[in-house]
Image (cartoon, rainbow, N blue to C red):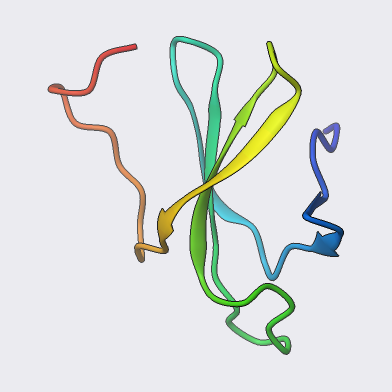
Length: 73
């Protein structure tokens, strides 16, 4: 396993979880704080884009991330 991203704006992630790789190559993951003290300012969903080598904070964290048939890359 290879780590592709380890921090957002200079701070490590809380506890990355629920990873999804879409057909367009973007990597989406949740970052809740379950057991450890929170490092980021909250629980968020992030998207990493290889093509731009960029990570974006997308929205407040959901408990599970699922792609339904209506989501197409």
